[in-house]
Image (tube, rainbow, N blue to C red):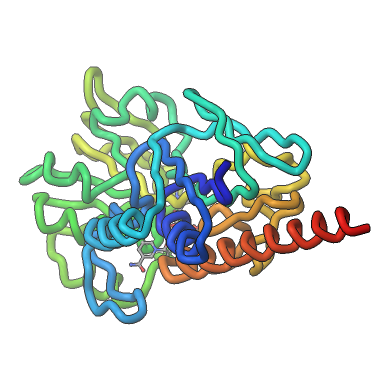
Length: 310
Ligand code: NAP
């Protein structure tokens, strides 16, 4: 019996795990792919308090080591559902069912797709959602990035160091990312801004060869072997909670204390409905969720204790 099972080994999940074990609880983290979460694809992190500059990979590695050295167990299994029986919970994976007292959902969010024909088929064959992972394959080539947020801006900056030319395609006439990134991009002679434009078609036989973009009703073709999609994220919580427990966008409806509408289930990080999704707020959520889970276990114990004395 685990005290806490945490679903997701990103910043929120691993922070919750650190707080959980430090509070003397038995903690299991379930992760489908690799630990680290979204920060793994950040080239550099400069806005985490107390750390002046660190790569996303190193940040994730440090947090993983901190958690496991403190005694957190991590299993690489995809959590499929949560079953409830007499106040206890069972987190079911493809391999087993793990009983526990509380569950912390730290499922993050997955990359949003453009929703174009052939997008899935060409993923890994020119379509990528991670410039830092795949950018080096396109050294000396022309590439494109679609999106107008910080991720797209950082991707375009990163790729400008490898690629001959980078088209930055955004649907509106102004970007949404931070001014300092926009300013750095302006200095890059090999980045061309393609504003008020949408990618409408992906062309190529075996691999991506070109993309068609629509600029105010006029179509143009860009010869690029790679398109980096950076159009935000969306959550994936439907396996664990019902529609009434999620908001309209699918994020978990839980407040700053990270308590969901279901007793004993908490939500931390990007999967929770909130205004700011940053590394610092993911860590803050992890701490809040773990402490709320500890308080919940204490409440239950007190109630059970009161029941036996009566
Ligand atoms: P984001 O801020 O949500 O931006 C998504 C961008 O994609 C927006 O410009 C949006 O356009 C565009 N978009 C959405 N759906 C689209 C579609 N179907 N077709 C074309 N364009 C579409 O996402 P993000 O850049 O991944 O950033 C997510 C969060 O992480 C943000 O809070 C961001 O600040 C943070 N972040 C921080 C850092 C850092 O601090 N170093 C780095 C990366 C990310 P509109 O603008 O028209 O809505």
